[in-house]
Length: 377
Image (cartoon, rainbow, N blue to C red; front, side, top):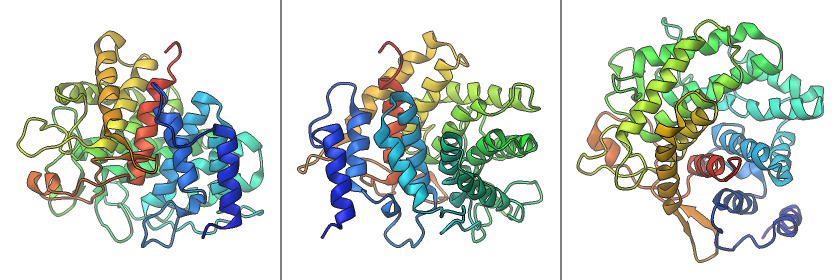
């Protein structure tokens, strides 16, 4: 049975947004989907895998990240209020964190939302929470090459972990006035490039000391890096050493993605740079992330619109085909993938095609939202 708190939240959302269950109108997928998601997960601490006991980690952190972008594009208070509810359930009046565990890069991402709340309210408790999360890097394990381990239990470098840690640290350096931390952001991004980038501009899924780089480019894994590269230049000063190298890599990444976009659907495949290989399939979450990178890079003038806008527009057209309105009226997302490092192409394409993963919702909101809320559209 729903709690009184959940019922009141749901009624408030319906009053604000109208029917939650209508088929999305043209160019409104992001708005419809975010409202339905908030209705479905009225308590944001429920955004976690069923076996997890900690909601202060990447699943919720990534949804808050995506909702902040929608809030900035639209001014929609429903998104901001939901983010604040999540943070306030995890940060007490003195700024103590209820669940933060500095033993995995995944757990740093919710700090991004704490920084948003500090920027918008000026309340020191949010700054205190962000400082606690930042100190988690001080004793965090590294390889001799300077790269952070994915977690205290996983002595590997995963491309997604670089996003989880460095998007927080870049914003922390900017918001909290610690420019010395930009050097770490650049170090980790240049480091993952040295370890995992291929000649075609795509990034393989990860690396470890014993075997080196893993062989394949997993869609959602490279997608996390795409989102990091899309947004990190909002924070890095223009005179930051290494910035131009990262910008060059952004252009190589966009060029590589353009070259391997599925010509049939406009999407990208589970193994990104092998779209025509037998058994490969379009993966939703990574496709939303790549669309977001390309459109942001166009909007910021990093890549030419005349060359890349058709790529973004085709990707949007393909992405919305992965949204299916179920019999209850909710938007479900098909063909998603949540996995760790795999050893071969065959293992990647054999992974289950999941439905409505948390990562896919965040990526779908970013990909559809940036297209639907472009000025003049």
